[in-house]
Amino acid sequence: MTKSAEAQFTHVTTWLTDMDGVLVRENTAIPGAAELLELWEERGQEYLVLTNNSIYTPRDLAARLARSGLHVAEENLWTSALATAQFLKNQNAGSRAYVIGEAGLTTALHEAGFVLTDTDCDYVVLGETRTYSFEAITNAIRLILNGARFISTNPDTTGPSPEGPMPATGSVAALITAATNLHPYVVGKPNPMMFRSALNQIGGHSETTAMLGDRMDTDIVSGMEAGLRTVLVYSGVTTPQDVERFPFRPTLALDSVADLVELLTVDGQDAAGAAS
Ligand SMILES: [Mg+2]
Image (cartoon, rainbow, N blue to C red; front, top):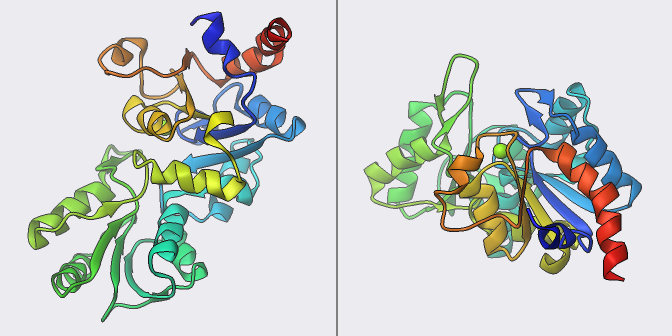
């Protein structure tokens, strides 16, 4: 990458970062992640750790990250469940929702003032669960056919498990779509709504915010569309060869967050010095 791409990060004061493949890999911290979080804390920079996973509450996620040796406060976590609850609150506060999901989603909607019900609702909200109930899916289909609006927390069609891929929210949404002929409005990445709501949450501005991620088709494209500088790291699912296939580029591509720490502490100062 050129010096000018690196220099663009000297004026960044707010950070959004993906979690899996950037900070952690299968519950193990990626080298450099703890140092990056410390650096942001030290400099008093605002940041949010973003995840499309709607199973966990911020408290659960903070505890999971702490077990990996990463200390992230609850208020620094932003999930697709929180983004969905905020979106629906802005749309139609205090209405009724039928939820297929776990504590991450039910807690978020409850705290946003929604009445959770399994009959007579304004919205069917589909999120990630560990076990999808056919009975719950049937109820969702009937409610949607009766006029409930269909919302989904994230588009991911599969999720990881130790035994292999598992069908996830996007696959269940496809089943409901086949039965109702209606598509959900999907809030999580790559919808830039996820980033806009995150920025609102910490009072950040797109001109001074950067997005870190390991996926071109979610993190980088939606960061770019939300008007943010983007940093791709190769510590997750993307290789340098993969990047060539996309019609867009990240602002900067690095091997891992360890390189970002180096850039922000050494090259960053050089670049700032050269610019002044
Ligand atoms: Mg990721």
